Length: 474
Image (cartoon, rainbow, N blue to C red; front, top):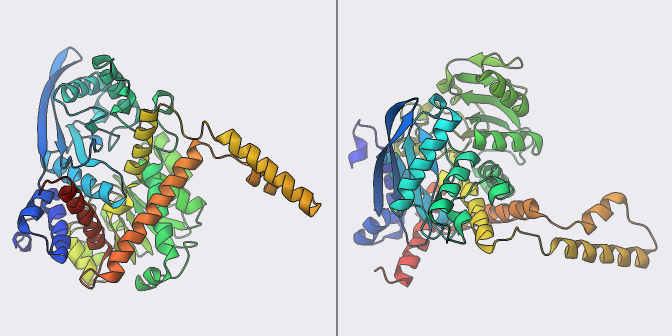
């Protein structure tokens, strides 16, 4: 096969080879396999924007991998290394990701070739609004057919600009706020979306540790407490994942890898302190409670219990896979392990929880936001006080029957009515747990499947095939 030569695989080739493993297991017809892997549509857009009195031409892409469900869903990233192959690979991952976690979307992705740090806020607003107008006019952005979200280099701010641009072009569309997700809460966003991907990563790890046989197979001891964790990338995803693992699960984050190097401390790093240092100094260098090295790549090879790559794709490759010294890799980023590296790590019996499952928390909560926008009402608004009243009556009945007054913590818990954030977190936790069990069922019941990645694609492809057959695509 082509991947056996010395030429490095492209991102989309790497994804497709991983999908091929699952297609082989399922023994699916070649034509159907080709239809599943094929990217439906990719549009390339070049447009001028005046910056500091001079016209600059920007290039962006939006790719739709599958529209078996609508809308197609996927983020828009702003980065100086964006290219068409990357966008198409990420769009295909979105299709499989949505299928795995039972979110009824097709897969899409967008990217703009830009270094956001080189532009002012006003410049970025003009660029974003122009990019949005081009996508809207060409049918690649609407609540019904294609819904972007934040990704690398973008956030709530950019989503608010895009939503406002759509509203002005389509004021008749009552569902205009559903044209993007990841918006500010005051503009139709949902509480819990910013932290969703990182929190989803943690929910996935917790579910793994609830399954004693999987923990034992990975060579780990039960429980997350005290586990030595190395995390690459302290952006949005890495920050929330690391913070929750440190503060709620009492794990030890012994190393943080960033663009400019790696921080290490065997006793564990304070994630909040590191983040504040980065915000203040724009670097991890100089952080007082750790050892700093400029060789960030070597940080991936630190001995640890759990390695969480939460930065870019293709960070663990055939060049460094033999040197990885962890028992569990949790792919918080998209495509951080290449196909060749995956082969090496599987042969070394290192357990990998794959990106298509692990980082699906973002699209899951995006789905909640989209539904909220279509319903035009926040979750919990109608039932919260009713639940509190019912809880108070239950508590009163218990106190009457027992002749004792409940303790303060008991009163607080029983009378509590869930708000939107509680419901979002509950829905996300339920999704990550159920999806893990679907992967585990395939892993345990199919002799041809020996790893979570293949299991995840088997689950996704089975659902895609069923969907295509149901609607008569073939």
